[in-house]
Length: 484
Image (cartoon, rainbow, N blue to C red; front, side, top):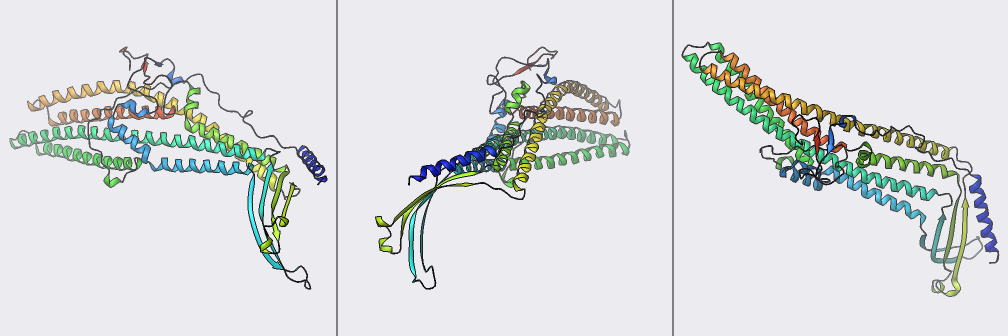
């Protein structure tokens, strides 16, 4: 027993020598990578968006409540609970948490119990003997190279990436629910406009038919008005078909059966908030998809470190204790006890290039993760710039379109009066009615696009914005001078 400390010291010294001799390649880092520089501000927000006093119309976190629509709030909250994509992400997060626990268990003391029974003889002429054993064994690997700790780090980064992916999935589902809801509301508004126009066409048809019977107009005029009525009725049916498809898509998003889900047509009462984009650096900190890409990059870096440490030897402390006897009655007697301790030092010498190949694979995956992270950064900046630009242009388009609608409505009113008095032909009236219908539908499309771009901007900045709850903005170049 006096030789055990000497043996232990010898083995430890040998392990240190081997660890020193096996120089590990450095882990890849992003320090030398050419990541896109974070701009000081968004170009489309320069001089146009600024924070003002808090308003109750926009709240941080539950961002959809900024639209002040109770039906919308109910749908999003249902999707948060029942959407299948979110459920899949939750399950993946649970699996990632279990993996980190399993990986960390490798650094713990491993204890096992064993029992065996056998009968045989060592030589052909020797009598048969019974062998019975029962005991415990344990082992503990010394993480001298840091291989196990880097494996745990990689699993931890994977878990954080899964958490960010869950937030990204949830944000994406919320945005799609809101945008689908607005598309439904827009179709309801458009259907109402088409219905009003259809009624006007039918009134024109009845008047034209009476004038035809009186001999004031030709049969061709009646046929033209009837054609306009029929084509408008076809458009009405097409809108109904589109609405049904959007309704079933919304049912899937909220986790309900399409045949049992319905959304009653009602006025579009949603309010349009204006969202501050914030600083680019803040956007990167808030966006869950950027965070997920960053964590995956860190996990790839840790796994590259694990692969680099494959050349280091492993040192495992082992021990066992129990009983051994040839008679079951004497198996657990004190005299039948046995024990042993030891240390296992092992290192591979020749592996046919397996470790080098695994190192190259880990390095390549790090490069892949780095490229994905860089692409995610560029995409984040692009998304915000695109939506800010869209909102700026849509604001100007809405002003021009509102003027066009006003003029078209006035033209229809004057043409109707002149046609009723027999001063103009039905062609002028139909042209005026078509122009009004076209401009009113275009105005609705601009409004829908504005709501959709606002939702896209909220998603692009990470689903929330910094500052006090209810932060709103004013547009400095608004000629009306009012906060918007």
